[in-house]
Length: 273
Image (tube, rainbow, N blue to C red; front, top):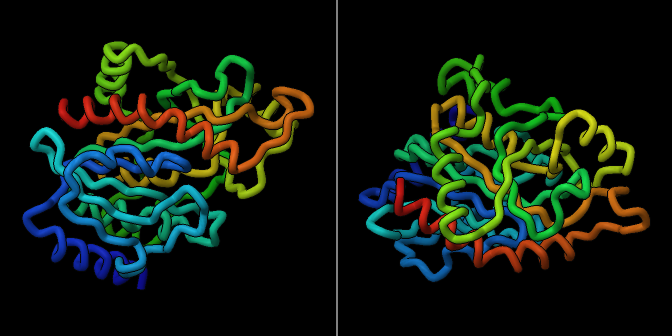
């Protein structure tokens, strides 16, 4: 059944992307859907039209697959992503990605909005991920759908491509955008973390925490896709600043302010692929 779902998703995309097969995919997180909006769009497909792909229910996620061309490169831009806290199985959150890889994607750049676990990283900072901690223990690799794609005993000694990270750091320096490397922790949400959870995550080496990304990275690594992720720090985690409460509106506002800098970085990166 699961294999049939992926097959239907792939067949739908393969037919509509014939001649427009993307070389790379970019996933835009919360509040970041406006990035690359001034680039030539070749085709836009609402997620609601794609078989076996969920419809995003979270504000700040457009729910559109946008095929763009920039510097002679064809790129699939996912304007919005899927989360397990929306009621999705991990397979559901990565099925569109899997289908895009089957269509020819070789590189992936993910973005997300994340909370800082300490005062070291503040709202408005960019964090280039070098590793992650899967607090949820969920994985998209324990399913029949994953097994149909190859071995699920995937090495994750380098979950985030050193080659892509080096390119991104060089590009950020060129554009004078401050960017540091760090570790991301995935928790399911949708509730924000407690102060005790944030302290625990920081103690165990997590610089930022969020509710996405890791399942996507695992699915991409299984398919041997070079992957990188830039976290936009949109807030301090609970308890980092005493008495400060969190809201999704604040996350979207801060992320929107960071769009211009991230847009420059992603355009330069696409041109370099």
